[in-house]
Image 1 (cartoon, helix red, strand yellow):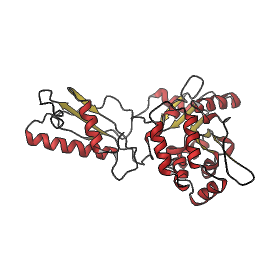
Image 2: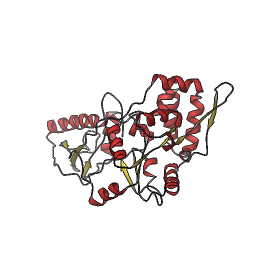
Image 3: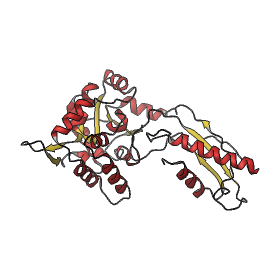
Image 4: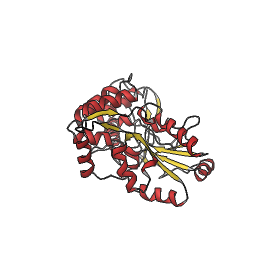
Length: 316
């Protein structure tokens, strides 16, 4: 996922040395004036127009080989967009065209709407129907924003945290270390958090309240399992009629004397890599659940689908 049309062009050139390139089921994930899909469509349209003018256009459209959306790690997202429109574009590369930036891609693009929703298999439906409990990620899933980013901006550390996140994306840093570094930059006080919560009620994703109400009516237990903070997720649970005891998340610590930041509770499952799977394993052992579902938008949510953890993962 890229935020710049020129980067899309370079990515397209890089992977089109010959044959067919299928770019399918791209879900916009950047909260920018122009979504990733729109950027790609614009870029392809410009390339196509230029190639048509030069008389080098060859094209074909094909059905997608997979109905699954691409999943992106949370670190690549600023916020999930409400739209889940998907576009398929197939391009044929003319390998006889001179090898220049504007001539490597000799293509006509045929954007086309993909099916609005893929039907799950009967096995998936059976597992969901038989599930004892459902676990939901919070940031960019239950809520439309990313809590730590919003808190950072409130505390005047938004740009610094974003820069640190970009550096962390290079690898070599554990989830816990990245969390510690971001919190050290934000340095939130108890007063900061209280003021933030008072001014920022939960931004629930469309339809999530109705979904959770339906699950609860059907006797399913619902949990919020997040790498975010209990202080910020508590109001979300209240808005959804989920007991706060059903929250598995990190806990900010403050000094009692003045409310200054004192770190976070490292005993929480989600304070480390693989924590969501550990939290679900714990819930299964504690409550005797036989089947549990995890729903979320990031790699840490997918990690919950390991042996002994979630029995099915739903990518949001």
